[in-house]
Length: 93
Image (cartoon, rainbow, N blue to C red):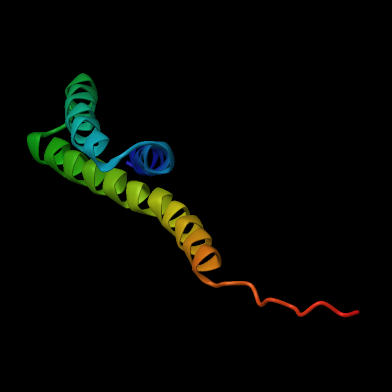
């Protein structure tokens, strides 16, 4: 379970830094397929697979959110710098 959490957070953060929000839906679907196959291969119970799917999807979304926050902060800093005019200094002769 810890491996699933860490991997989902890292994949979500990488997607948040590089990709748009529309990539999150295919990632969640891929996560559901991979986690279900992984659980079936390890002979897990149905409830365990459901919980792992829920945790994996939630961690993907949290990682995506954590990956997008720096991008928004950088964009906001650029906008505030652009909107604030520089003072004009008079010529000193």
